[in-house]
Length: 383
Ligand code: SOE
Image 1: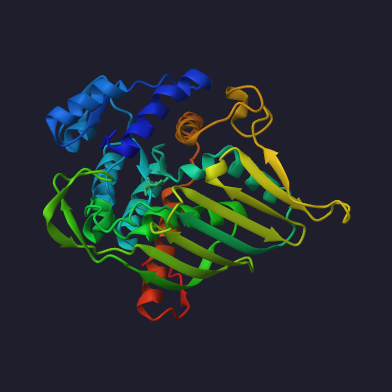
Image 2: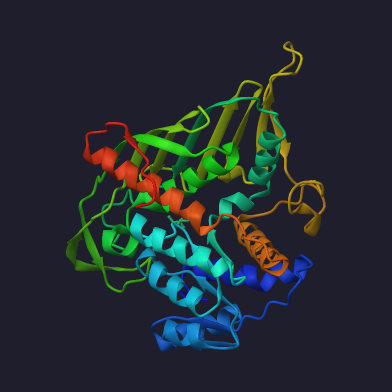
């Protein structure tokens, strides 16, 4: 695993846990973690249970005892690490968004498709697909329970940037993160919308805003936290992104991704309306899915709150009795389970790098539309 901050912690937990609750076809060994600082990486290895550590990802990629490279770094290094890992014959799991640009994501997708022929697998880590409630939502859509899908409403609301003194962390720098709320949060919504509906976004009309354009430089570059110094630097990404979208199956959608939704900590919400019903999900009630079934008797019809904790629900057979809730970390454990199962079965796990590239194209179209005063622009095919 390369990187050991927030996502590294979540992935470490997942790699350690997946084989203890699911019957995996392989035994997972946490071989090595990689980071730039020897002290901090050694600490991370000890804390999260990695057998060894490296301070250069190239050394990691060159190690013959390693089968999988898991990329948990900021977006500016995804492409380089993934391309080297695929070339070295390693399976790759890569954090989202897949890359910082469409051209990087396209290079990664081409490399992944070439590697597939040699049995090398790759996957992009859109972990919300592995929330049991959203996996169930997908099953219901596939079974036709929503009928023809007309509309998608997707919001991803956080508020950690409302304080103008919050330091200029890497997520606020275009050169490191690619974009702001758009790529960090909007990417999840775009992937979830396309996954749930089975439709692809073909055009968007958008508005981006940066409310606080200068922030104190972090005393140390440490991601979301980090203490501020007296010097200030420019914020080069969006704080909030709003856009509308058309889908290839005829649906339309409205999206909002923001780090300025005061009071909302991690409200990843999505609602899909079709001719036969509506499904609604909010990650702040992670174990629930609301379902309005239009075929119900009209006098008593209404939204039903399904508690997605039955052993028959996706992933739940490995966990607790009904009503004993799962959390955010389980989504990463499920992701490892599906990734390892696909590698063993010789199948391509989803979301693939090609799926990540499609999301990247939507993000790029949102930026072009915002630059063109919100005019609807097509989602361009791969260059
Ligand atoms: C930070 O804004 C963040 O950790 C995202 O990067 C994650 O993808 C999301 O799941 C939670 O918020």
